[in-house]
Length: 267
Image 1 (cartoon, rainbow, N blue to C red):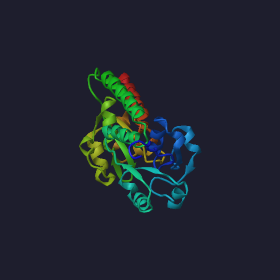
Image 2 (image 1 turned 30 degrees about the vertical axis):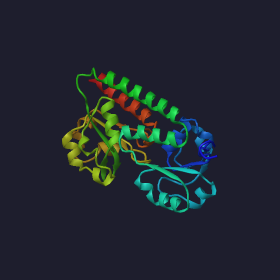
Image 3 (image 1 turned 45 degrees about the vertical axis):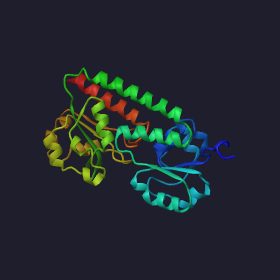
Image 4 (image 1 turned 90 degrees about the horizontal axis):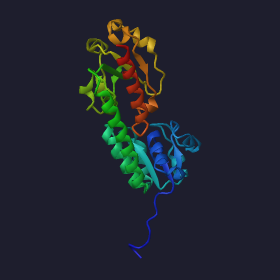
């Protein structure tokens, strides 16, 4: 009878991004995940699932063959595959987080959709507790170093909002903080001379899956006058730690905090 029969939760989940796969596993639903993107690395068990494509290139037939009752997607960049999946009658939950708080909300939303709300609340509380600890630790520093984060090198693209926020939580000052509200990467393009003028004391870079060439960064015209270059404070960050808007951002936060802490110790 309606109202008395238990509603079955999604049993066959396909994740189109690494962070949605990580969230599903951390919330205790890894056994229900049947497909992941080729970029999925965390946890290691996710690597054994069927691969359904890359971040923007997917085989619709492969996804449909897995007979998912829920597909988890992220961002407007996946709108084409989301459109095709919905057109095929598949239920899709697509989040579009841009800030750190958006990431926490996405975890709660996904947790509710897969019947793991309590676990989702516990996970975000752990994340909030660690953020509070790092903020308190860095609050005692007399000043905050100027930090430039580079998401791409040709053209130069500054960090998305959540990266800018991680820098501030970790104890730094994003030299392009005014760009954090610009959603598209093309709206965060910065001229090399402007980076030089803002004179970052630390340069962080993660080139969307491509290895960072720190030597080429240091060799850019006029950049030998930048404080970070003169002090050899150019650091590569793993893309999985800072460009995947899920729980792994905490790994990136710890790394940024470690870099800034080392900078403070060397002053």
